[in-house]
Length: 144
Image 1 (tube, helix red, strand yellow):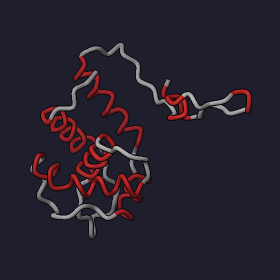
Image 2 (cartoon, helix red, strand yellow; image 1 turned 60 degrees about the vertical axis):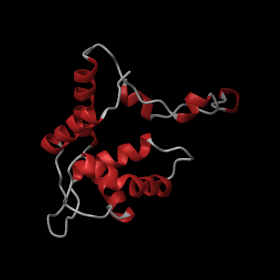
Image 3 (cartoon, rainbow, N blue to C red; image 1 turned 135 degrees about the vertical axis):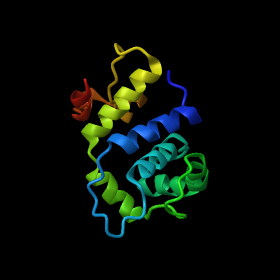
Image 4 (cartoon, rainbow, N blue to C red; image 1 turned 90 degrees about the vertical axis):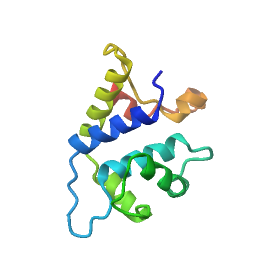
């Protein structure tokens, strides 16, 4: 299991800055893509209630100052807007992000033989009822 330490988060942030392409128009761009992604991940990891974009965004606002202080981020003094966050997440190059994340995890663990895969929340809760014809999500096939 990977320990998410400040040093580990800083290393991942540096990799995102170097390798994650930001295809947004430079006019009016206020937030660095790598920082928004790190803040989003922190909000997800620190989330304690039902997941929704609104609740995750509120968590992003809650942790904005802490994360920006920790990463020495001074580009903006307020959190990205919720509408802009959604646009950023839609346009994110997930294949590149997944490659960066996989490389970072392999370096952190030191064991490249570990295989990662996405699992649906219903799978974790055991709430898939095959007698009623419920299926597992298609997204699990992509990552295996």
